[in-house]
Amino acid sequence: MKAGIIGAGIGGLTTALFLQKTGFEIDIYEQAPELNPVGAGIILANNAMQIYDKLGIREEIELQGHAISAVKITSPKLSPISATSLKYFEKKYGVKNVAIHRGVLQEILLSELAENTLHLGHQLIGVHELEDKYQLEFSQGHMISTPVVIAADGLNSTIRNAIFPNAKVRNAKQICWRGVTNFQLPTRFQNQLTEAWGPGDRFGFVQINKEQVYWYALKKGNSEESIEGYLESFKKSYHSLIEEVLEATPTQNIHISPISDLQPIRQWHHHNICLIGDAAHATTPNLGQGACQAIEDAYVLTECLHQHEADEAFCEYQRLRMPKAHQVVNTSWRLGKMAHWRNPLATGLRNALMRSMPPILNRMQSDRIFKLTLLESS
Image (tube, one colour):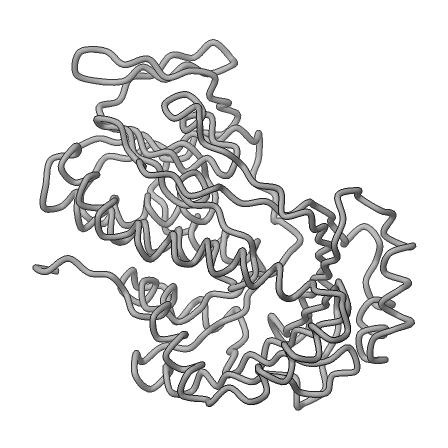
Protein backbone atom coordinates (compact mmCIF):
# COMPACT_ATOMS: atom_id res chain seq x y z
CA MET A 1 0.00 0.00 0.00
CA LYS A 2 1.17 3.53 -0.76
CA ALA A 3 0.13 6.80 0.84
CA GLY A 4 1.08 10.44 0.47
CA ILE A 5 1.10 12.55 3.64
CA ILE A 6 0.80 16.32 3.30
CA GLY A 7 2.59 18.08 6.16
CA ALA A 8 5.58 17.14 8.33
CA GLY A 9 4.33 18.37 11.69
CA ILE A 10 4.03 16.15 14.75
CA GLY A 11 0.84 14.50 13.43
CA GLY A 12 2.21 13.89 9.95
CA LEU A 13 5.51 12.46 11.16
CA THR A 14 3.86 10.21 13.75
CA THR A 15 1.41 8.90 11.15
CA ALA A 16 4.30 8.21 8.79
CA LEU A 17 6.16 6.21 11.44
CA PHE A 18 3.13 4.06 12.27
CA LEU A 19 2.34 3.41 8.61
CA GLN A 20 6.00 2.71 7.90
CA LYS A 21 6.01 0.18 10.76
CA THR A 22 2.91 -1.48 9.28
CA GLY A 23 4.55 -1.90 5.87
CA PHE A 24 3.18 1.05 3.93
CA GLU A 25 5.26 2.88 1.37
CA ILE A 26 5.14 6.49 2.55
CA ASP A 27 6.00 9.86 1.08
CA ILE A 28 5.70 13.05 3.14
CA TYR A 29 5.40 16.37 1.32
CA GLU A 30 6.27 19.46 3.34
CA GLN A 31 6.07 23.01 2.02
CA ALA A 32 8.94 24.35 4.18
CA PRO A 33 12.36 24.27 2.48
CA GLU A 34 13.89 22.97 5.70
CA LEU A 35 12.62 21.80 9.09
CA ASN A 36 13.96 24.26 11.62
CA PRO A 37 13.40 23.51 15.31
CA VAL A 38 10.41 25.53 16.49
CA GLY A 39 11.19 27.65 19.55
CA ALA A 40 8.45 26.31 21.78
CA GLY A 41 7.72 23.50 24.17
CA ILE A 42 5.05 20.84 24.02
CA ILE A 43 3.27 18.78 26.67
CA LEU A 44 2.95 15.12 25.74
CA ALA A 45 0.14 13.98 27.97
CA ASN A 46 -0.43 10.42 29.08
CA ASN A 47 -2.50 9.48 26.02
CA ALA A 48 0.25 10.61 23.65
CA MET A 49 2.95 8.84 25.63
CA GLN A 50 0.98 5.57 25.57
CA ILE A 51 1.06 5.79 21.79
CA TYR A 52 4.75 6.65 21.60
CA ASP A 53 5.35 3.63 23.85
CA LYS A 54 3.68 1.48 21.19
CA LEU A 55 5.94 3.11 18.60
CA GLY A 56 9.03 2.28 20.68
CA ILE A 57 10.28 5.83 21.30
CA ARG A 58 8.82 6.54 24.76
CA GLU A 59 12.13 6.09 26.58
CA GLU A 60 13.98 8.44 24.24
CA ILE A 61 11.30 11.12 24.71
CA GLU A 62 11.45 10.71 28.50
CA LEU A 63 15.25 10.93 28.38
CA GLN A 64 15.28 14.18 26.40
CA GLY A 65 12.23 15.76 28.05
CA HIS A 66 11.07 16.38 31.61
CA ALA A 67 8.47 14.39 33.57
CA ILE A 68 5.33 16.23 34.69
CA SER A 69 3.35 14.73 37.60
CA ALA A 70 0.90 17.56 38.34
CA VAL A 71 -1.01 20.40 36.69
CA LYS A 72 -1.72 23.40 38.90
CA ILE A 73 -3.87 26.49 38.36
CA THR A 74 -2.88 29.44 40.55
CA SER A 75 -3.53 33.12 41.13
CA PRO A 76 -1.14 35.66 39.54
CA LYS A 77 0.92 35.48 42.75
CA LEU A 78 1.07 31.65 42.47
CA SER A 79 -1.38 30.93 45.29
CA PRO A 80 -3.05 27.57 44.52
CA ILE A 81 -6.54 27.46 42.99
CA SER A 82 -6.71 23.94 41.59
CA ALA A 83 -4.36 20.95 41.40
CA THR A 84 -4.54 17.73 39.41
CA SER A 85 -2.13 14.94 40.30
CA LEU A 86 -1.05 12.79 37.37
CA LYS A 87 0.63 10.06 39.43
CA TYR A 88 -2.52 7.90 39.40
CA PHE A 89 -2.35 7.80 35.59
CA GLU A 90 1.37 7.09 35.61
CA LYS A 91 0.60 3.91 37.55
CA LYS A 92 -2.53 3.04 35.60
CA TYR A 93 -1.02 3.33 32.13
CA GLY A 94 2.67 2.82 32.88
CA VAL A 95 3.86 6.04 31.21
CA LYS A 96 4.63 9.57 32.36
CA ASN A 97 3.44 12.92 31.08
CA VAL A 98 6.42 14.66 29.50
CA ALA A 99 7.24 18.26 28.67
CA ILE A 100 9.76 18.54 25.84
CA HIS A 101 11.11 21.06 23.35
CA ARG A 102 9.05 20.74 20.18
CA GLY A 103 12.20 20.79 18.05
CA VAL A 104 13.70 17.93 20.05
CA LEU A 105 10.55 15.83 19.58
CA GLN A 106 10.66 16.60 15.88
CA GLU A 107 14.26 15.37 15.69
CA ILE A 108 13.38 12.13 17.49
CA LEU A 109 10.58 11.45 15.01
CA LEU A 110 12.74 12.32 12.00
CA SER A 111 15.50 9.98 13.19
CA GLU A 112 13.06 7.05 12.95
CA LEU A 113 11.90 7.91 9.43
CA ALA A 114 13.10 5.83 6.49
CA GLU A 115 15.50 7.57 4.09
CA ASN A 116 14.10 9.46 1.12
CA THR A 117 10.64 9.55 2.70
CA LEU A 118 10.49 13.29 3.46
CA HIS A 119 10.28 15.73 0.55
CA LEU A 120 10.85 19.36 1.57
CA GLY A 121 9.97 22.45 -0.46
CA HIS A 122 6.73 20.92 -1.75
CA GLN A 123 3.91 23.44 -1.39
CA LEU A 124 0.63 21.82 -2.37
CA ILE A 125 -1.63 23.96 -4.57
CA GLY A 126 -4.09 21.40 -5.89
CA VAL A 127 -5.46 17.86 -5.60
CA HIS A 128 -7.00 16.21 -8.67
CA GLU A 129 -9.02 13.00 -8.41
CA LEU A 130 -8.33 10.50 -11.18
CA GLU A 131 -9.87 7.09 -11.77
CA ASP A 132 -7.95 5.16 -9.11
CA LYS A 133 -5.56 7.70 -7.61
CA TYR A 134 -4.97 11.36 -6.84
CA GLN A 135 -2.66 13.76 -8.60
CA LEU A 136 -0.93 16.18 -6.23
CA GLU A 137 0.08 19.48 -7.79
CA PHE A 138 2.85 21.50 -6.18
CA SER A 139 3.82 25.14 -6.69
CA GLN A 140 7.21 24.20 -8.16
CA GLY A 141 5.45 22.46 -11.03
CA HIS A 142 5.80 18.92 -9.64
CA MET A 143 2.91 16.52 -10.29
CA ILE A 144 2.86 13.37 -8.15
CA SER A 145 0.33 10.52 -8.11
CA THR A 146 -0.72 8.52 -5.05
CA PRO A 147 -3.67 6.20 -4.28
CA VAL A 148 -4.22 7.54 -0.75
CA VAL A 149 -3.83 11.09 0.60
CA ILE A 150 -3.55 11.91 4.30
CA ALA A 151 -3.90 15.63 5.04
CA ALA A 152 -1.79 16.65 8.03
CA ASP A 153 -1.42 20.21 6.80
CA GLY A 154 -2.74 22.08 9.78
CA LEU A 155 -5.42 24.59 10.69
CA ASN A 156 -5.40 26.25 7.28
CA SER A 157 -5.30 22.94 5.42
CA THR A 158 -5.15 23.30 1.62
CA ILE A 159 -6.78 19.90 1.21
CA ARG A 160 -9.61 20.57 3.67
CA ASN A 161 -10.32 23.91 2.01
CA ALA A 162 -10.54 22.11 -1.33
CA ILE A 163 -12.85 19.25 -0.33
CA PHE A 164 -14.79 20.94 2.50
CA PRO A 165 -14.81 24.65 1.57
CA ASN A 166 -17.48 25.52 4.15
CA ALA A 167 -15.28 24.64 7.14
CA LYS A 168 -14.81 27.66 9.42
CA VAL A 169 -11.77 28.75 11.41
CA ARG A 170 -12.85 30.45 14.66
CA ASN A 171 -10.93 33.35 16.16
CA ALA A 172 -10.79 33.00 19.95
CA LYS A 173 -9.92 36.69 20.24
CA GLN A 174 -6.84 35.88 22.27
CA ILE A 175 -3.17 36.52 21.59
CA CYS A 176 -0.44 34.13 22.70
CA TRP A 177 3.25 34.77 23.35
CA ARG A 178 5.53 31.72 23.66
CA GLY A 179 9.16 31.45 24.68
CA VAL A 180 11.94 29.04 25.66
CA THR A 181 14.76 30.19 27.90
CA ASN A 182 17.70 28.84 29.88
CA PHE A 183 16.34 28.70 33.42
CA GLN A 184 15.97 26.31 36.34
CA LEU A 185 12.71 26.54 38.25
CA PRO A 186 12.65 26.21 42.05
CA THR A 187 12.26 22.62 43.24
CA ARG A 188 8.53 22.88 44.00
CA PHE A 189 7.81 23.81 40.36
CA GLN A 190 10.17 21.29 38.78
CA ASN A 191 7.74 18.48 37.93
CA GLN A 192 4.54 20.36 37.30
CA LEU A 193 2.85 22.52 34.72
CA THR A 194 1.88 25.78 36.41
CA GLU A 195 -0.67 28.16 34.93
CA ALA A 196 -1.40 31.45 36.70
CA TRP A 197 -4.78 33.08 35.94
CA GLY A 198 -5.21 36.82 36.14
CA PRO A 199 -8.10 39.09 35.10
CA GLY A 200 -8.28 38.59 31.32
CA ASP A 201 -4.84 37.04 30.98
CA ARG A 202 -2.75 34.09 32.16
CA PHE A 203 0.80 32.80 32.24
CA GLY A 204 1.99 29.19 32.12
CA PHE A 205 5.44 27.70 32.59
CA VAL A 206 7.09 24.28 32.77
CA GLN A 207 10.58 22.81 32.86
CA ILE A 208 11.25 20.97 29.57
CA ASN A 209 14.75 19.68 30.39
CA LYS A 210 17.40 20.32 33.04
CA GLU A 211 18.43 23.63 31.51
CA GLN A 212 15.33 25.09 29.82
CA VAL A 213 11.88 26.40 30.67
CA TYR A 214 9.00 26.78 28.23
CA TRP A 215 6.48 29.51 28.97
CA TYR A 216 3.40 30.98 27.35
CA ALA A 217 1.31 34.08 28.02
CA LEU A 218 -2.19 34.81 26.76
CA LYS A 219 -4.53 37.77 26.91
CA LYS A 220 -7.78 38.88 25.35
CA GLY A 221 -7.45 40.84 22.14
CA ASN A 222 -7.05 40.68 18.38
CA SER A 223 -4.03 42.92 17.85
CA GLU A 224 -0.51 41.55 18.04
CA GLU A 225 0.86 44.00 20.61
CA SER A 226 4.56 44.62 21.05
CA ILE A 227 6.38 41.99 23.03
CA GLU A 228 7.98 44.47 25.41
CA GLY A 229 4.81 46.43 26.16
CA TYR A 230 2.64 43.44 26.82
CA LEU A 231 5.04 41.37 28.89
CA GLU A 232 5.83 44.40 31.04
CA SER A 233 2.31 44.08 32.49
CA PHE A 234 3.10 40.53 33.63
CA LYS A 235 6.26 41.68 35.35
CA LYS A 236 4.24 44.18 37.35
CA SER A 237 1.16 42.15 38.28
CA TYR A 238 2.42 38.56 38.52
CA HIS A 239 4.78 36.73 40.88
CA SER A 240 8.46 37.70 40.82
CA LEU A 241 9.36 34.21 39.52
CA ILE A 242 7.46 35.01 36.32
CA GLU A 243 9.37 38.26 36.02
CA GLU A 244 12.64 36.32 36.38
CA VAL A 245 11.63 33.89 33.63
CA LEU A 246 10.72 36.75 31.30
CA GLU A 247 13.91 38.68 32.06
CA ALA A 248 15.93 35.56 31.21
CA THR A 249 14.29 35.18 27.78
CA PRO A 250 16.02 36.79 24.77
CA THR A 251 13.54 38.71 22.62
CA GLN A 252 14.40 36.59 19.57
CA ASN A 253 13.20 33.51 21.48
CA ILE A 254 9.68 34.91 21.85
CA HIS A 255 6.99 34.13 19.27
CA ILE A 256 3.54 35.65 19.00
CA SER A 257 0.39 34.30 17.35
CA PRO A 258 -3.39 34.67 17.52
CA ILE A 259 -5.38 31.77 18.98
CA SER A 260 -7.88 30.03 16.69
CA ASP A 261 -9.51 26.66 16.28
CA LEU A 262 -11.61 24.82 13.71
CA GLN A 263 -15.34 24.86 14.28
CA PRO A 264 -16.19 21.13 14.46
CA ILE A 265 -16.99 19.65 11.06
CA ARG A 266 -19.02 16.48 10.39
CA GLN A 267 -16.81 14.88 7.74
CA TRP A 268 -13.09 14.15 7.82
CA HIS A 269 -12.70 12.15 4.62
CA HIS A 270 -13.71 12.03 0.99
CA HIS A 271 -13.11 8.73 -0.83
CA ASN A 272 -9.39 8.03 -0.29
CA ILE A 273 -8.50 11.45 1.15
CA CYS A 274 -8.48 11.77 4.94
CA LEU A 275 -7.86 14.66 7.35
CA ILE A 276 -5.93 14.25 10.60
CA GLY A 277 -4.75 16.51 13.41
CA ASP A 278 -5.38 20.24 13.09
CA ALA A 279 -6.66 19.80 9.55
CA ALA A 280 -9.56 17.80 11.01
CA HIS A 281 -10.06 19.20 14.51
CA ALA A 282 -7.75 22.08 15.40
CA THR A 283 -8.25 23.08 19.03
CA THR A 284 -7.29 25.99 21.24
CA PRO A 285 -4.36 25.11 23.53
CA ASN A 286 -6.26 25.21 26.83
CA LEU A 287 -6.18 21.45 27.54
CA GLY A 288 -2.69 20.82 26.15
CA GLN A 289 -4.20 18.29 23.75
CA GLY A 290 -3.64 19.71 20.25
CA ALA A 291 -0.65 17.59 19.32
CA CYS A 292 -1.82 14.73 21.55
CA GLN A 293 -5.04 14.37 19.60
CA ALA A 294 -3.08 14.34 16.32
CA ILE A 295 -0.89 11.59 17.78
CA GLU A 296 -4.01 9.59 18.68
CA ASP A 297 -5.24 10.09 15.11
CA ALA A 298 -2.01 8.60 13.78
CA TYR A 299 -2.36 5.44 15.83
CA VAL A 300 -6.08 4.84 15.26
CA LEU A 301 -5.87 5.63 11.54
CA THR A 302 -3.04 3.16 11.07
CA GLU A 303 -4.95 0.44 12.92
CA CYS A 304 -7.95 1.07 10.68
CA LEU A 305 -5.85 0.94 7.51
CA HIS A 306 -4.31 -2.31 8.72
CA GLN A 307 -7.76 -3.92 8.85
CA HIS A 308 -9.70 -2.24 6.01
CA GLU A 309 -9.37 -0.77 2.55
CA ALA A 310 -8.76 2.99 2.60
CA ASP A 311 -12.31 4.30 2.15
CA GLU A 312 -13.74 1.94 4.77
CA ALA A 313 -10.77 2.54 7.06
CA PHE A 314 -11.35 6.30 6.95
CA CYS A 315 -15.03 5.82 7.84
CA GLU A 316 -14.07 3.69 10.83
CA TYR A 317 -11.35 6.12 11.90
CA GLN A 318 -13.83 8.99 11.82
CA ARG A 319 -16.40 6.97 13.81
CA LEU A 320 -13.85 6.12 16.49
CA ARG A 321 -12.04 9.43 16.79
CA MET A 322 -14.57 12.18 16.12
CA PRO A 323 -16.52 12.10 19.44
CA LYS A 324 -13.41 12.45 21.60
CA ALA A 325 -11.66 14.97 19.34
CA HIS A 326 -14.73 17.21 19.22
CA GLN A 327 -15.17 16.90 22.98
CA VAL A 328 -11.62 18.20 23.39
CA VAL A 329 -12.24 21.07 20.96
CA ASN A 330 -15.45 22.18 22.65
CA THR A 331 -14.18 21.78 26.22
CA SER A 332 -10.98 23.66 25.42
CA TRP A 333 -12.95 26.51 23.79
CA ARG A 334 -15.17 26.91 26.88
CA LEU A 335 -12.23 26.67 29.28
CA GLY A 336 -10.34 29.34 27.34
CA LYS A 337 -13.25 31.74 27.60
CA MET A 338 -13.68 31.07 31.34
CA ALA A 339 -9.97 31.52 32.02
CA HIS A 340 -10.12 35.04 30.57
CA TRP A 341 -13.02 36.39 32.56
CA ARG A 342 -12.35 39.89 33.92
CA ASN A 343 -15.29 40.56 36.25
CA PRO A 344 -14.05 40.22 39.88
CA LEU A 345 -17.30 38.61 41.05
CA ALA A 346 -17.26 36.08 38.22
CA THR A 347 -13.59 35.21 38.67
CA GLY A 348 -14.03 34.93 42.44
CA LEU A 349 -16.89 32.48 42.01
CA ARG A 350 -14.96 30.55 39.37
CA ASN A 351 -11.91 30.22 41.61
CA ALA A 352 -14.01 29.16 44.59
CA LEU A 353 -15.70 26.44 42.57
CA MET A 354 -12.36 25.20 41.26
CA ARG A 355 -10.90 25.10 44.79
CA SER A 356 -13.87 23.09 46.07
CA MET A 357 -13.92 20.55 43.24
CA PRO A 358 -13.27 17.05 44.64
CA PRO A 359 -10.05 15.47 43.32
CA ILE A 360 -12.05 12.50 42.03
CA LEU A 361 -13.83 14.78 39.54
CA ASN A 362 -10.51 16.11 38.21
CA ARG A 363 -9.34 12.50 37.89
CA MET A 364 -12.48 11.47 35.99
CA GLN A 365 -12.11 14.38 33.56
CA SER A 366 -8.47 13.50 32.93
CA ASP A 367 -9.25 9.82 32.49
CA ARG A 368 -11.70 10.59 29.69
CA ILE A 369 -8.86 12.27 27.84
CA PHE A 370 -6.08 9.81 28.67
CA LYS A 371 -8.04 6.65 27.82
CA LEU A 372 -7.31 5.66 24.25
CA THR A 373 -9.99 4.81 21.72
CA LEU A 374 -9.11 1.39 20.34
CA LEU A 375 -10.42 -0.92 17.66
CA GLU A 376 -12.13 -3.99 19.06
CA SER A 377 -9.58 -6.35 17.57
CA SER A 378 -6.48 -4.25 18.35
